[in-house]
Amino acid sequence: MSLSSRSPLYLAGLLAGAAAAHAAVPKQFDAIVPRALPGSPRAWTYASGAVELALAAGIALPRTRRKAALAAAGFFVAVFPANVQMAADWRDRPAPQKAAALARLPLQAPLVLWALSVARRQGDA
Image (cartoon, rainbow, N blue to C red; front, side, top):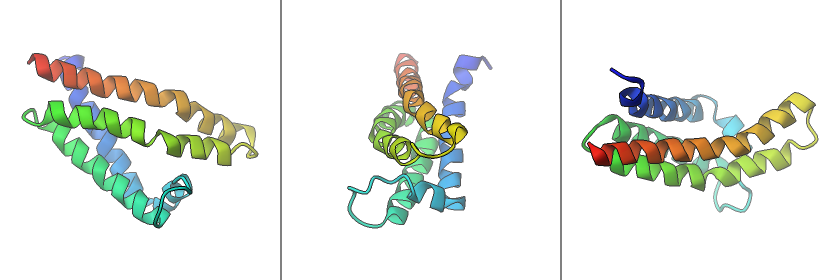
């Protein structure tokens, strides 16, 4: 199995891992939920984890891969404000934490491109 053929499974694994992290350590995710969103941060943390798990399942299955990968690209764009919130909140933290928060911002773009690539390859299949 080539790397490109495993790419969807790696993306699904990343999403499943993120979903598990949302459930296992929700407090760290609660802290980056933008305050402008209505409701409790914990509800948003669990909801985003559930979405990640559903996307992982959809990407893992060839029959639903294209639509799920497109949805994942949209999801990665939709959660970007949480990364912005984290960078803003962590601006006064020690340099390594501030650097980690700032590094998350440009890393969202490769995730979007990866999901779009998985969708495009599935469309060609």
